Image (tube, each protein chain N blue to C red):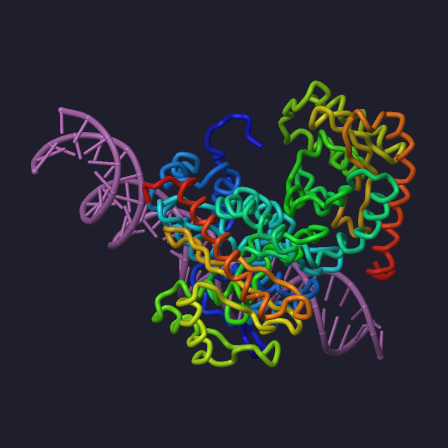
Length: 264
Length: 264
DNA sequence: AAATTATGTTCCAAATAATGGAACATCGAT
DNA sequence: ATCGATGTTCCATTATTTGGAACATAATTT
């Protein structure tokens, strides 16, 4: 999120907001953090920070090991397991993801837009369904993923501009969009044609084709994608798959309508 | 947790504690909750509750759909994905779980004790690794699972007594322990022999054999288990598997020692 | 071994945020 | 249109958080 390496200095308001910044710090770290590490990152008085961390530990959101290092708490897993298991959007989409996987033999993703990120809600792989949490739950940038661009294409132009204004572009590969202008142009195109590509923009050698999916109440705006290695997925093949991806997306939305009733 | 269906009435202290009670309420519900539902469950003034829910939504811990129903927020998935991916205990255990799965052909679990529950950190299944989050992250009772009883056997008797005093026994099957006395007796036995069984105590037709695993700093006290259907896993077979389960447990603990250094 | 520094914990008056009752909106169904 | 149910806002009171400094403990150097 921040391009500078220093303190997030989040202007978060409210008790909860401040605590969530800390939780973010610790869960984003590659390794458990010592008190002093967090002190430097959070830029808060020692006393305050200490009490905040104590509260987070008491609630099981963080854990403190025998060496005084803070790590994410396992209670988070319990919360997440429940959220995931009962998520209506995911439950409805799942069979259609499987169908799409069967039809193409490649990996299929379901993701939704949250803030400036795409959070992956589900993943169906070929041979062996990949390890849990391997991708599910992960947040990826919206500007360099097929699902992300498909999701953005659902927003009114003004909202897209606002959203893009607030993010910093990281150049993951040579193809990654690095300016709001070119990205916006592509998103307009995507909105017209109804599908998006990822031309090795997030990871070299990985391509995808995606179609937007949304719920009528706009709670979920995201997409589904077929992803695979560039050597196997030519751009020509991806163009062919645009239709089945869009069809699957349509079936998911139809499923939502039926499941949630016609009232909304 | 509560046997009565009514308001948890948690005597939680501090701003965060109160909010976590709400988060628990919503994530434990089978379906998204309306404001009024939560009002009844939480037993708080309307104004207070409304503001609290708003804060949780602002932070992405809850989500409010177009019908005014509150559901768990997807930000929880992101937190959990990180916690899981980087959990040292799990990373070290994983290869040994795979070995054990290969050797027996049955499902292998890794779980740790958190409060009165076992939280499953990993699961390795035979043919097809099971769907994500299917079990991982789930909290199960400690008194009727192999991993749970194995974990309890690591505690000093006094701590076990305290812990058992605070829980209410649900009789999941005819074999479920329903009193602290018989359970305590079995746990003593488990402590002596170094392995535990689940004799269809949590789910009819499902048995397991488990061995305790812990980290030296006592941050993780849990176990690994081999689980399967009773018709395939005779008690005789489970007795035979006690040795490989204990060996795998030993290797995991050795791995922890090497990884985390000899200093502790 | 003593001194020094780095690190972690506790305390409490002042600043800030949460509380909760009641008034105010909004929506659905008669 | 009216009524009841549901959801939202307001603000003086109350409770919590804040942050500086003193205190405690462990690690390192002299």
